[in-house]
Image (cartoon, rainbow, N blue to C red):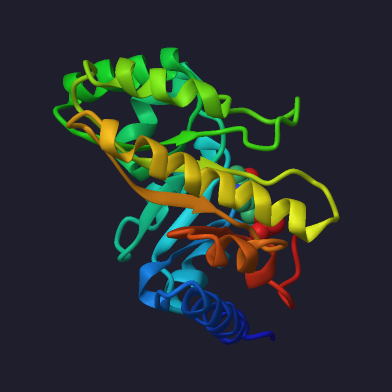
Length: 236
Ligand SMILES: *Cc1c(COP(=O)(O)O)cnc(C)c1O
């Protein structure tokens, strides 16, 4: 029988080491970068093994899977991140289960999260998703829309905009990928001084298995890593 926890521990250690060396290359430390383990390819058993291996930040793409894992793993020290698109009809059930939504991708969604958060008496932490690469298939606001999004957000109660999230384009040229991550960092710097009270922009969620080292170099404070943590674990 394979020891799932041990394999994930080994993979986690390697990823954390690379996060650390790239953080240092950008004048920071490993502690400045939060690792979200994306467990969307696996069920609750493997997800529980990730928590046992030492990572309590779990990313999910599909809200239904997140709801059931939140129930099944409720006794563990775990925080869930909804990293994929959230339909408005799933807002009510999702916001109470998550630490953060990474995919704030429309004003209608932000408005409905605000209204539902008021009803439930909670404050929901959200990242604005930005489509830096301009890829037609990607969700998110255009970079030049973000300033007006923040103006709109200023009057929405019970939401806390903690930063921005992006996915790099699928290009094979790493210098282009790095440029896209740098653009999100520069966008944040240009908006910092104009943030309303419920917007802090402290986080940049960028980088997945194929490009997290570049993302950390360019200032990522959160990386979302799936595949790289599960080498050696069979997908059922
Ligand atoms: C699946 C996914 C990831 C993780 O991708 P890997 O290549 O498995 O590391 C990160 N971010 C989002 C938005 C995803 O959907």
